[in-house]
Image (cartoon, helix red, strand yellow):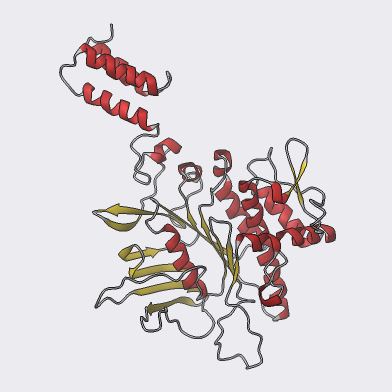
Length: 422
């Protein structure tokens, strides 16, 4: 499992460091402060490949941009430090197979995925390999279209894709299809809105593929290419998890080795496209699916997840374990990005999380309501308020707050005490 990341003169700040929790790491913060960047660096530290563009170093005379990391392995802790080579324009790494034995998956917010499998992916210059050994890819990188239609670089069929595999698995009724159905059920929004595959169909004369369908609450079976963006993303996550694990099992059997005992899942904005009801369950469901995927109790699971959802955080309050989980917050302090591990405490409902130190929102209301409340509060602090000022503030509140808003209790009590509410 990834234990530590330490960055010097790379990314949004001169210095960032994370001592990661062994199970769940949630990363929050405003847009543009480096949340996705941290996932990219974590992927590179674990796999020795970049999922997209390499991290850009700070360029000033005398600087030595460095990425250091440590991860837990079976016999202890392994660490490495890479100082950017400006002449080679690269982050140099040691040759050989990465010491981390776990499987790594990275789900990005645009629908693309990356997979690193210790049985199928390897660093090219492994000294122990003979010259005629197969050249395995350093990782599997799927753009959104390839997730659905297949990954076939240079004519090699590395993955059939979601559409063909789901049809094939359903036709055979094998373990992959059973695991997929179980995963979809676990990741469903609720027990009343279960994701369940229907019969195969065709969508056009020009497409000869048997298309999987999804059963809907309104009685129709909709081809998966036509379902909503939220459902597509969850189906894709379930598919990639099952595909990665099943292919790893097959590869491990061919290599005559045991399957991995670690799974690390990096996910950017897991709540993207999801209805609030679904946001409240998705992360706990994902942890359950990852733990159940292998069918073994001794497989460790670590998740690094970026989130903007206060509802997702509120939903984790009963499950969060400070010994195994961590909440990280990227913030802008004096024009400098700072990363801190938040002290975990229960903030309450989604509104309480919105106005907490994690999201820093002054009011969980509209901008107009926020301005009206601020104006009203300024009057409430004064010793004397003219009737016309009171009336103007009251009218502004009425225009932006519902009758049941709790602020009215404070306002009416103050107005009566000040002799203005006649």
